[in-house]
Image 1 (cartoon, rainbow, N blue to C red):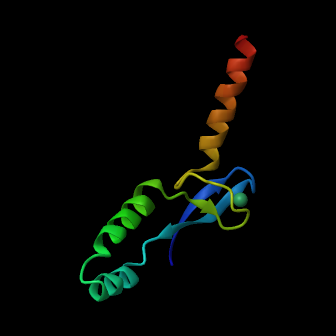
Image 2 (image 1 turned 60 degrees about the vertical axis):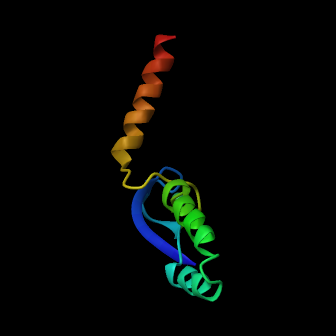
Image 3 (image 1 turned 90 degrees about the vertical axis):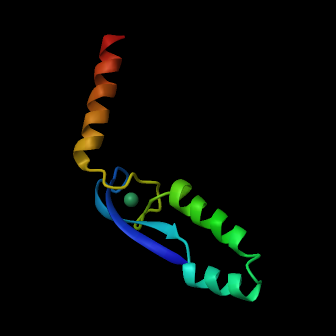
Length: 89
Ligand SMILES: [Zn+2]
């Protein structure tokens, strides 16, 4: 299985961390497509689309779902807006 790496801010670890996502193993799918005379192409397509659009980035330390490219400032902004919303009530 291929693993794709990135970086993001993990609110649980409270720091910028290495994040990982499951990738598509194109070499394996190519091999399986060749030995099944192309029948495996449908499976390859479904796996590729699923991993590309629905795959979740996870913190490499705690395994929690993290938004790719996020920073501590993004989470501070969210916390501030939630605090303001509760003060208005
Ligand atoms: Zn974490």
